Length: 166
Image (cartoon, rainbow, N blue to C red; front, side, top):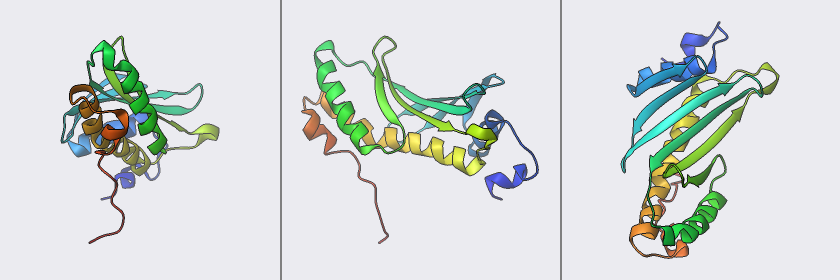
């Protein structure tokens, strides 16, 4: 059954949809408030913390996907240079580093102005793209911080997206 079949006749809150998706994938989640949910998604490299929040004010479903990272202070300039290179390759969402919290963050906002409703497939794809991006660039971040590579060298190991089929 498609994710959206359950919601065909109902206009449903975006966070209710996220909760249904988390249950469908058997992810650990916590409904923090009516407009916010947090969950843990297991990746190949690590477990990612995702938080999705609905803002009725600007009709945006905001998502942050985070993982801990504690680079030495002398690596911060190179880290920010690598993040610029990474963000040049990201068409949806972007990475930033929250130094105070020691978190690498992938952010994305799905604007649903004018009363638009996101489909479960859209939200599932948004979550999947966040985890896929984190997985794709995690090795480059590690090489830069702990492998003494330059940003230009580190970005070369980012797992390329495959097109076509074998």
